[in-house]
Amino acid sequence: MNPSFRVVVVAAIAVVALDTLGSLAARAFGFGYGSLAWGSFIIYAVAGFCAARSSTLRTAAQAGGAVALVDATLGWAIAWALGPGRPTAGYIGIGPLLGTVGLAWLIGIALGLMGGLVARFFTRGPNVAG
Image 1 (cartoon, rainbow, N blue to C red):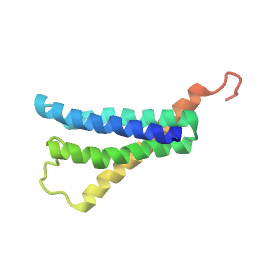
Image 2 (cartoon, rainbow, N blue to C red):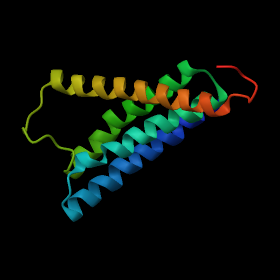
Image 3 (cartoon, rainbow, N blue to C red):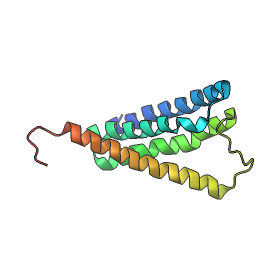
């Protein structure tokens, strides 16, 4: 299995676990489910970091975006089914739904790229100028 693909699979499992456990915890303890977004953002960046260690910055951005898509679709569906991820408006149209997924995807790409840049910074050799 390609190392970058493995990174995406592991990160996708982590973000779905965060959504599932976070939804259950938010419901049980009464805190805002949205406060867990930072955990998702960290997972996107870590996916980019790990992907960049064995591949390119483009792959890092793609890894972050792919994990964000899993989070914004499967993860959100789980949170929605469990309760805390359900929009308060009751009904949400396809436009706002796709807009939310698209924004999450763009955030995932940006954070994956940032994670990849950090990986490149820390994995440069000591004699590399710049």
